[in-house]
Amino acid sequence: MNWNVLESAPRLLLEAPLKPVQGTRFQPTGFPNLGPARYEAHDGTPMLLLESNQSVANRLEEVVWDEASRDWVKPLRGLPYVRVETPTGEFLTTSVLEAHRLNSPYILEGKDRSFFDRLKAELGAQDTGRVDLGLLARTLLRYDPNALIHGIFLAKKELAGGRLRLPRALSGFIEAAEVNPATSGGVKLDEVDPSGDAKKGFGHVPFSREEFTGKITAFFNLDLVQLRAYALGPDAFRLLVGLSLYKVLRFLQTGLRLRTACDLELTGSGLGVTRPEGFDLPSLAEMEATLPELIRKTSPAFADPAVTVVRYQSAKG
Image (cartoon, rainbow, N blue to C red; front, side):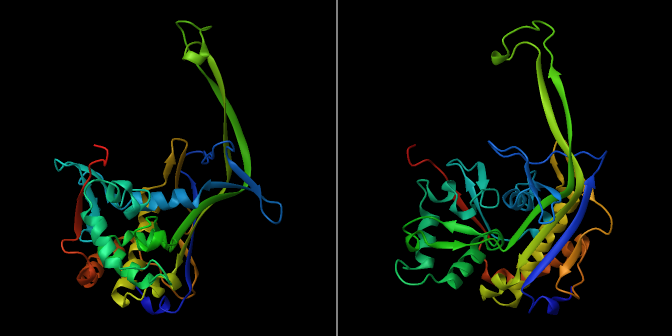
């Protein structure tokens, strides 16, 4: 991979044209009290938000976790994370799976305060003055590099007064242009009591359904300025870039079944680079072959052992 192109570029911008694997209709994400997020582009083109930044971030994390082995997928084995177990040693969750990563209540709010106290000691007293983001970055690299990519907010007053936060370095969203609604419907049948009380689940219940057609594109933005600002050294920088690229490539290959009626695939020329010019995008196979060496080179900065175990028991229990 031609790293030199990325060492001075401010952003790595990627675009991927998508289409339904069958037919032409797709089901967008829905929002409470809003439904599908429809809007118009500046030129009046009807648009639809198919998948939000928040949702894509979650999906990028999901595709690198092997649920069967309860560990990273094989090319990422050796990366640090925090594993949460019950008092009897049974698996509960991890910082990779938790919505707020290390700020998970299962990591910081249980009776086991060992990891919390370790974080507090390593991050130092920063109750006043500017927060040392370099120190925060080195600490996150030690215990959970995933947080350096997807951001974190350690909202605990004991940790620098609750001011320890990093924005997402990698973000993405999926939208559709030139959209048209595809309205349909159906009936939930009750052959036993067709006129029964629908509020209690009985009777025939008609419903409507709104799907859409349109031109779908996934967009990804990796903030290289932010990654360089961590000042973690060239090996860690390349690891974070490589891990970000791997997440995107794997998501586009294995994670595009977004909903029952929204199963997508790459089309046309596939994933492309819009910035910077001259960067040759590696394949998923190339990243799988590259990442173990990047992890090995960065491992002196990791916790030893790489997996930190926290035993969770509710403070009320």
